[in-house]
Length: 74
Image (cartoon, rainbow, N blue to C red):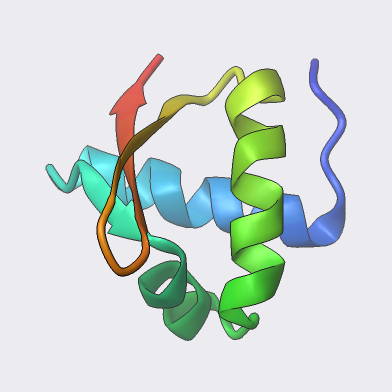
């Protein structure tokens, strides 16, 4: 089982719940507002979680003004 920090647990739990409701595209700012972290805290952890998450598949999707992440169930 993958070991997560407390902040990573909060991010993965939010993504897992959101994906279960059918959402697929996220920005760090949106995640941060929902779970009470800064967008920088979330943005730094998403690439790390993309490598180690067994719960959801996290993929850098596009970059316009801010990076959009595509998240799908594993």
